[in-house]
Image 1 (cartoon, rainbow, N blue to C red):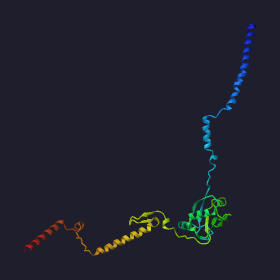
Image 2: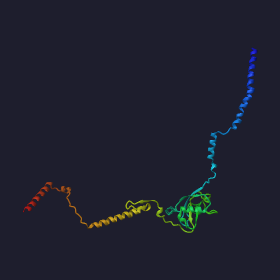
Image 3: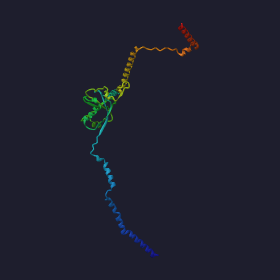
Image 4: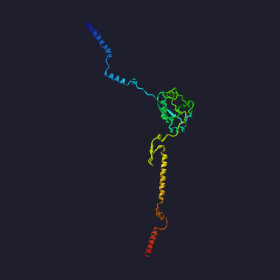
Length: 274
């Protein structure tokens, strides 16, 4: 039995040596190199496609394109060169009808005062020829009084105002030398027109109601004139027929009327025969 045990032990030791011997070193050599080999493998096609898509949508791929920066703000043009308070509701209504009301204007950010003035004059044409302007805003200590916004070294520009303390407050434009015209804008600026159903004329909507009053009045005068011309013609008077209710209101029976008509007919016949 002991001999068999020794043989079994020897067999197990040989098996262990075989596992730990040359085969183990070969296994280590087979396992270790893959990390080295895989790190130097070429990039496959799928990876190349993904890389191309990333390069296409990189934010710095369009670095040569110039981005235009804009600035928008609310403006209101005052008509008097001496205005120093916020206009009332009635004054705002007059300014709106005169084309000087509140507007939100968008500027391209730059330091060119000529571009800034040109944009203001496009939105407020009555500013042209006013002899200069200045910008104001509501005072910090009051909601009614206006205070001057001092211009920058280049004057009033969109870049300067966007970085100033103006914030969200309305910017008021005030002429310096002359007052602006506050008459309502011409009919070409009123809006669309509508056809009058009485005369067929195209009339601006703002004046359509007054036009209808004049148009209907003219038609009524023409109708009265036509009636006065027809007064010279003879008129035909209608024969008055007694109403049935009037006949039935009397106490006399209906047969008496019949008898009376027959007797009257006989008398007329006798007169004719004679």
